Image 1 (cartoon, rainbow, N blue to C red):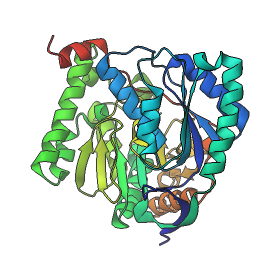
Image 2: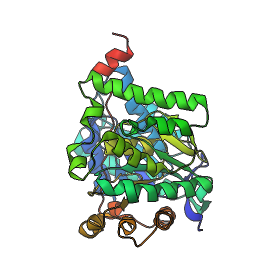
Image 3: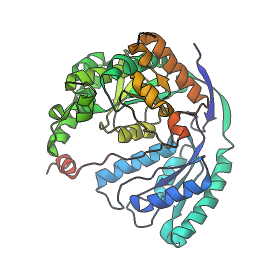
Length: 396
């Protein structure tokens, strides 16, 4: 079984599978400028425009900062430019300093200070050229699968991911963990109904307690904003695809993490360990926000399962699409990377499909471009801390 790939060694010791220069806006006010700077630079520049405002409550601001710093520290990023409008609570210089602790070249740009958007685009382009030259100095060297941190996600589900795509990806996760790497799946609302199964797989009581606490907290948060998660799932789209109960959906969803013990659970955008085995992350069910959380946690590659189809991508990490539905493979071939629908048609076993997924992950780590990368599908969104959730945290 192939285990090696060629990546970009960072000063932190981590290995990147891409060598992007990230353009990180501190708020929605600077997002348009960040997008414009990256668009004028070239494919190596990747912006992360998002929806967060210039002024946020302390807890929300801390989460936004954690995501932006985490994305800047992702090993796929060789250098970064932090862009502020100039009125945000988030300090661009502080963000740059926190990213630079990993030894990366980082610069800042203030739209107000340089005289507006036209000047910012010009200054930003000049800064990116300099940062790209610095990023090009990264050592391009051979690495082992044990250095990979792979995030697993699902979206656009019907009945086929639960019987084909998710078990195949789970088999690939088992192979990655056996090779010494880290696999991480998330979407805490989709643990509901199967949390007792995951709890039994936890390596110790502390991990088990944290897992059940995060599930309970997600349900309680949903209740605060008037959403009954157990009643709202499966979603209308999932039901149209053939899913009938939340338990059915959750049991299918957790199979994409494989069968190895749960060695830990981290919070949204918290750093994932290298060589950590199977580690869960507490994220919302919205797949774009959930993917961003794992990329901010250090995942170099995302594997995304779907039945009905999806176009989700990410600016920093390649997203490998695996469908369990043969018709989706035919209809959306340009967006899909692996056909696990062969299991449904009786042309492959779960193990054979899992080996194909694992081989594809290694090929993508070695430089093969995914369908999402080829078409520049680069959605980015940060999950928001709801005002009622803040009130609950503060005991009001």
